[in-house]
Image 1: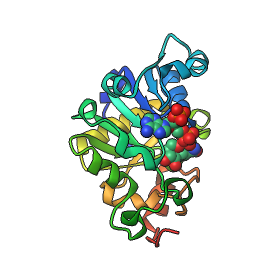
Image 2: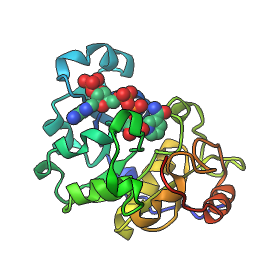
Image 3: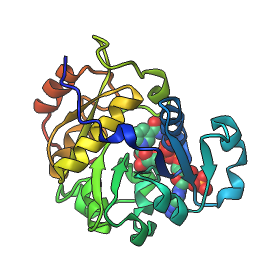
Image 4: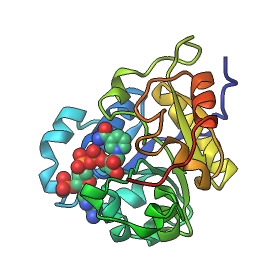
Length: 227
Ligand SMILES: NC(=O)c1ccc[n+]([C@@H]2O[C@H](COP(=O)([O-])OP(=O)(O)OC[C@H]3O[C@@H](n4cnc5c(N)ncnc54)[C@H](OP(=O)(O)O)[C@@H]3O)[C@@H](O)[C@H]2O)c1
């Protein structure tokens, strides 16, 4: 059984979420189920999120502007298309832990030379845009709908594991505790430079894995040229 991670996130109360689509809404559900509040934003404005807030429950969910969601979150999840990350505001995210669920789909995002040449990773691009934030890659290799469904308590023998990557050890500890709260074993697989190991089309992408399986599959993954 993996060691239980630091419990910093257990005192966390609010998750800011930028992007209210598949990933944003499903992480919101899992976070609320775990006892957190969420403040969530999309590109069109809080007035367009009424149905989602009703679905999530008004007691623990609030719609906001992007700046408000960024400012409100003790941790902030970025769940928007990769092509939009440069529109994210920097000031309200300074010093914050920013969870990045991004993946690169050239058909959706356009071709990005730094990714096509393996000079960066998707989260490396976000960290470059948010130099004063602590970006932690998380939730990118799980199907959004699985997030509330596959959550299990700490200690469940087949508990699903999710990778985290980041430059800052303390930020990763907080992110790991948050994932644990939501029902997942977090496996720290290194810096953002290593996060290609679970990017699109790798063997572990979308595959339910325990912590041991995740470590083994990611260690045996070879970096290929983006298609
Ligand atoms: N879907 C999955 O199962 C899954 C799994 C893992 C990772 N991911 C990755 O997570 C990211 C989000 O995917 P998704 O499937 O959740 O996308 P999605 O369902 O299309 O939702 C995207 C959300 O981002 C918002 N948005 C777009 N541009 C924005 C901007 N400039 N500022 C603020 N919000 C903006 C959209 O707002 P509007 O509604 O107003 O347009 C929408 O709420 C992608 O990189 C994807 O590859 C997805």
